[in-house]
Length: 81
Length: 81
Length: 146
Length: 146
Image: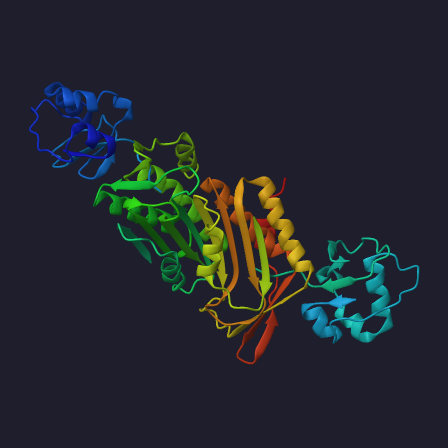
């Protein structure tokens, strides 16, 4: 897992390795599972509408399948430029 | 009179002072009158569609009135930038 | 010619312009985003997603090159901490015809704002806050659809 | 802040950019037209109508400032003889919002091409020829009507 911006700040770390059960097959399910593991994650992910995701560096909707993803990133909407 | 670009080259001078008769009241009539004065002017003004004009530095259609203009410029369509 | 750079180095506008002008094109359009001097921000911090950022910018440049007849495309984005008046992003497009250069430049900055993984944090006095995305940015990006 | 310059001096893009960036704005759009290096032109000569040129450019800048929320507008046009790779014209717009800067910049160069009294003559080898206006320039200028 990679976290950016205020998601990173609320989680308290930029990266962690997780091993979700096999029935966690989408990004949204992964977020739900992480939120159930700790109150820190639950707080960081409180408002799902404000979260965006990338799977193996490709931007995807939260309902996208995880497949055999090695790298999942969770972050707020982007604000560059 | 001021001339620019190929109009200036064909007339052979950049400026001249003229005194048209009082019945020359538009830019187009002034061009016609000048063309009648010399073959050089007639050749330079041969194709009226390719001429543009300014009266006292304001861009005007050829049928615009001369009024009491002090400076009339004749030139091709512009090509700057 | 596509050139994408993401770096903490100060962006030198003159050098960026020379690089895109070296294409020999007749028209160069640029957009430069700077840290504003007038709204009390002392430090603007840019975080990004290394690797994914560069890939997203290259994809945008390729889309622009496919859509307009361009001789060169250059996007240089700074990350890290920067101060008022410093350049955040340089977008430059070179083309034979000015319309292509101008439209591609607008396309790139509009889409970069919504599709490249950068996040801005502003420091005003002792306060820091993450910049919220603007609806107008989504609208600007959407007008290039289809 | 409107700044219009017509001069035979070489245009220094870096200095032009610094002048428009000094407004403190968050977004700067620029368009730079150069003498192309690829079509055999050895010298491009720009003739203009002194006095009327500056007035036409100031009018265009005022129209842009009335139509968009701009912090600065800068148009610098070179006249006289210039060589491939040299800058013919610099248009720079500064604004709080990038859309205003980008649109005003496109408006200015489109309208300048059809409304400011400049004439281009190209020298290729021993041949010189006056540049003919392009229909596409009239079309580009017309899209800003109304």
